[in-house]
Image (cartoon, rainbow, N blue to C red):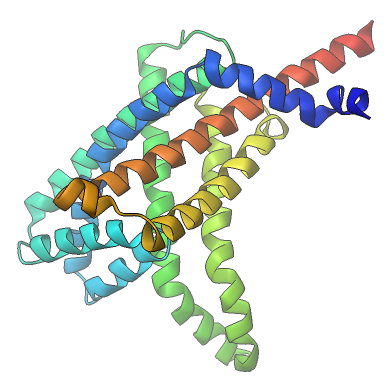
Length: 285
């Protein structure tokens, strides 16, 4: 029984992952990415708040949308920023927020690129222009994904009510929406992770080569966020230890765990690719 388990695919995956986790310094790479994401988080939030202030929508919608996926402590931090920014509506702040968000997110994408290249044991040799283009497009993709998720969370219910009322199926709406409200962000996350895993590394990959990591990253990010929120909201005592910095520490921890999951997803893709090449060589011989 133990011998069969030792040669099983799951055991081989876990063995490879443990080795790569240490060898590729995933924890160090996660810390580097988190550093840049912290710089991206607040300019992006300021950009969203200023963008929202030019519409008739309430800022409470933004707070509610964020609070569905993040711990309460981060929600309090977000709310404080919104209150401070909302009275200073400005085109300058809108531009600066977007520019700052693009710069910091592109740095985070570049760090992810470095981590994924390390997973495949390859060096970065793409030309500067091509590298910059990949980073820029990936950055835009991540920002669009986040904004699309928020838009669907805010307007999805309104659109759904209109469509279901049009076809005369309002009784089914509550059931369908209770599923879709979580499916839509999950699908958008899966698409984003798939595109990142396929195009960001300096390696030509097909979608079948990256689906393991994309599925893992999507499920992993959602699950760890929910579990971390549960822990922070019910058992965590960050404010007692860190005082007024408690919310910031929670944000850093949450981003660190999320980036850890994303990099592990990249390692799983590399492991899957390794075993696929190994099988192809064995079949040829």
